[in-house]
Image 1 (cartoon, rainbow, N blue to C red):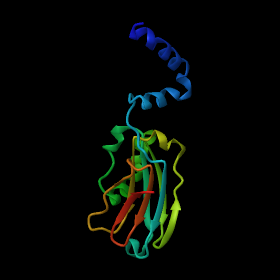
Image 2: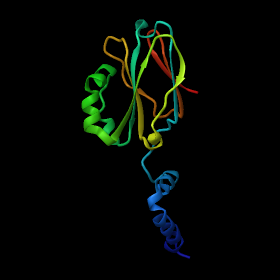
Image 3: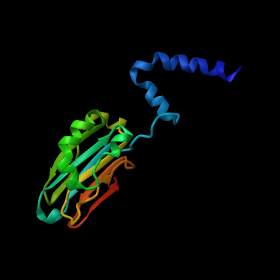
Image 4: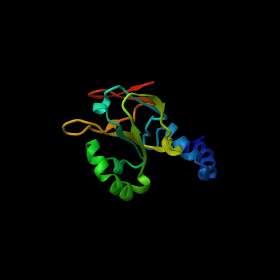
Length: 159
């Protein structure tokens, strides 16, 4: 039996399932689709004295198109200055979860959007006290990320 004959039933089955999202999952499992972010859950906490005792603006940005990643700013303050314009321009290519995290906050779970599994990248932007602003924190490789705002830094780890 030729390779084409063996592939025909698979192609027919994928064609029939095309409308229900199974094709994307199968393509991803076979390594045929674009690589996706691992992020499925996120917990955030803040130590006493984090951000000089001030609440921290924190945006979780999920990216659904690789081209959108290149448009994202290089620091938290730049993100917050441009956020409205970026959300307008990038519309369907990103999703944003905005948080205010008070200093000395116990760990809490962030409610991520339902389409998180379709993201190609995930970042956290913090409006954090630092001379040049804090760079975006890559959450892409973490499945169950834990973000901890410390007095002079931000640490991300796996749960």
